[in-house]
Amino acid sequence: TWAEAIAPVLLGSLRSVAGRTDGANANQWIAVGDNGLDSFVYQSTDDGQNWTKVEEINNLLIEDVIWTGNRWLLCGGDTSFYEGSIYSSTDGLSWSASTVPVGAAALLAMSHDGAGVVVAVGRDGQVLRSTDDGLTFATVAANLLSEDLYAVIVDSSGTFYLGGVGRTIIELNGTSASFLVPPAASAAPVLDFVLIDDVPFAVSETGPVQVRTIPLDLLIAPGGTQDFQLSVSESLSDKVYFLQTSVDLVNWGLVSENSTVGNNAALSFDVAEDELKRFWRVVEF
Image 1: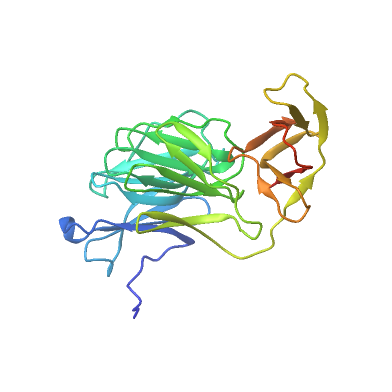
Image 2: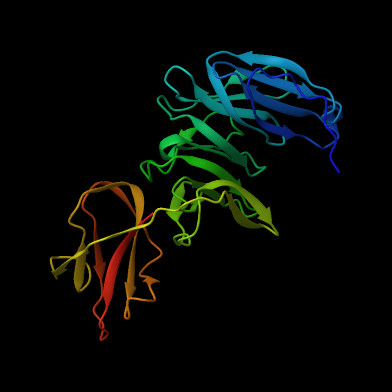
């Protein structure tokens, strides 16, 4: 059963709401939004019933706000160059800019492990990580991919999961990032995550999915690490590519859980010889 709260009067869009329900500050909540040019921060200290504007940040579009257990963090991108920005506050009233790498892409979402590690994700595959509870950030998983990342979540072990427009789930352990198995052909872009019994589930919206298969060239022992090297003749960029194999052209299996991101060049895959007649393909997601 839902009742409309006395919400903040925004001149634009409400982007995110977060709360600290530990009993401190009368169950304080923070809401953020923007009018397309500037952003606004609203606070509630009566469990979300009444809201007061406490901050206005010019030339910034805020996308997300979180409470780490020690401080509030909000992230977004400036409206001039849309570079990433993160602000922090311990009381929800006074906000100061955190340190982020120069030229970081605009940031869209954040998550924290409760022990001082914060991960922020954003445009063009931007991934930032902080180990001091969101005061300073460094780039991790650089050049992992160039797709926009919309969502990030962390499980109880401290493993972060990232997802976005490319539908592939990325696992981040410390500063080491890897792709998980490719999504089902019917999957849609990842817009958010939820944890159920400490298992991450990706949330998306339904819509048409574009999957393309790419021709392969076969080169015999060209110096690869195994018996054959399969190469793609065209230059590929931006998206994630997976190698699949089949013996009947009906049932296709993943050769390896490792994927490859196109870097505007031809890709190649080393495979081992066996006694079966095999078909191979590269699938672009």
